[in-house]
Picture 1 (cartoon, rainbow, N blue to C red):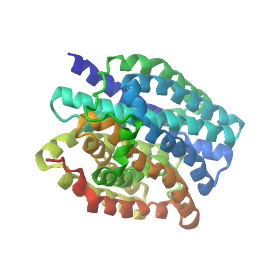
Picture 2: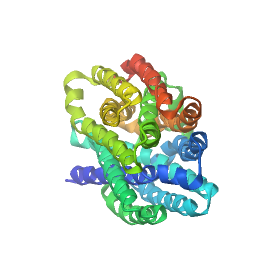
Picture 3: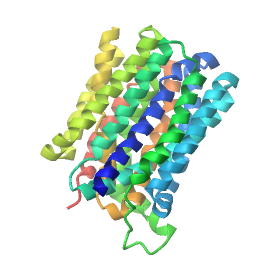
Picture 4: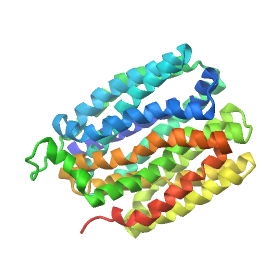
Length: 382
C-alpha cells in the first residue's frame, strides 16, 4: 500500500511539473510579440530558463540525498511558482524581469526533475515492475493539459499575467500536499566519502555516455517545446491558436509513446526500441520542415513526438539501474542532458535568424543520429 500511494504521489509530481512547464511554453509566442523579440533575442531569453536548470542539476544529487525527494520537490514547487509569477509580471514590465523569473523557474525545475526521477526509480523497485516511462507519460499528460489550457487562454484572449499567475498559485498550493506519500530515499552503503562520493559519478564512462544520449533527446524534445508553436506561426503563416495546437499535438504524441512504451521496452529491449524511434522522429522532422502545408506540419509534429518519447525516461532508468546510487547518477545524467536546454534555444534562434526557424530544426536530426550510435550504453548492466 505504501508503494502504491508513493506511485500516485510520483505521478502527481510529474503531471504537475509538466502542466506548469507547458503553461509557460504555450504563451511564448505572446511574450515574444509583447516584448518585440527577434528569433535570436527570444533564444537568449529562453536561455535563462536552461541556465537556471543547469546550475541546479549538479547540486541536486547531494541535496536529494541529504533532504530526500519529498522535501526537495515540495520546496522547489514553491520556488518554481515564484519564478513563474515573476515571468508573468515581467510580461507587463519588460524583458529583464522575464529573464529573472525564468532563471528562478529553471533552477527550481532542475532540482524538482532530479528528485522526482529518483523517487520514480525507488518506487519502481518497490513495485517490482517497469513504470518509469509511464511517470514521464504523466509529465506529458501534464504538458498536454497545460498546452490545451494555454490554447484556450489564447483563444479567449486571457491576459498572460492572469493565466500564468493562476498556474503559479495552484502549483504552490497543490504540489507540496500531493508529494507527502513519497517513500524515503535509498542510502548508498558504499558511500562513506561525503560530498566527494556524490560527484564521483562524473568519472563513470557509462554514466557520461548515457548523459550524452539524454542530451540528444533533450535537445529534440526541448526544441519541440520551445519552437514548434513559433515555427508553425511564422513558417506556415498560421494563426497563434493553430501554432499552440501543433505544440499540443507534439505533446500528445509524446504522451502516447511514453504510456505504451514500457511494453515495447520489456519485449524488445531498450536499445532496439530507441533506435527505431529515432528513425520515426527524423521522418517527422522532415515532414515538419519540408511539408509546406499546415496539416503536414501536424503529421510531422506527431511523428516527432512519438519518436522522442522514450529517450529521456530510458536514460533516467539507465542512470537508476542501481537505486542506491540513483541520486548521484541521475544528477550527472540530467546535468549533461540539460546542457541541451542551455545551448538549444540560442542556437536554434541564431540559425533561425539566418535560415528560418523551420530549417534550423534540422539540427535535431543530427543529434538524434549521435544518440543512435551510443544507444548501446542504456542497456541494463548484467
